Length: 166
Image 1 (cartoon, helix red, strand yellow):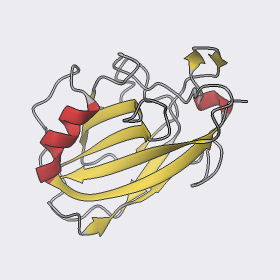
Image 2: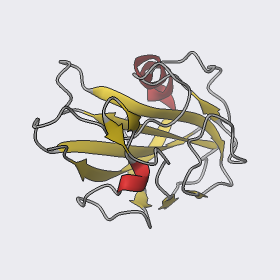
Image 3: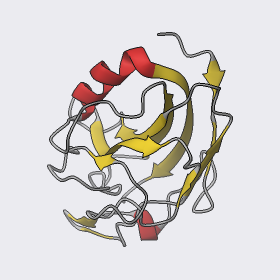
């Protein structure tokens, strides 16, 4: 389904095209950040929106397919923002279901690119969907989420953060 509307996605944690703060950087694999998902807000959802979903994908990861840092779907349509830390393993009161990231967990996992690999771009995408639930569970991968949600996307918007590990 072609997306006809663009959502506006913003964050108080960082601006589009700017560096992701240490509070959101992964805590592991040699990184020592706070591993708290950034605050996110979105607006401009079209009529007929029944839920939202959020993904974070790093296309610069040296895997050939990028690296998925967050998959969250079935967010109620009444939600237009998430507080910092909403990507914790528990629901954190935001609703929705955490799918499985490339870390193998059902939670937000922050940036932690290989040292000296240059700047990585973290694409945070918010999707407005025409169904209240996708019928998926916590074992859902990014690829499966994209496949199932594709026919239900009414609008999407993106915020890109940058992080480099020297």
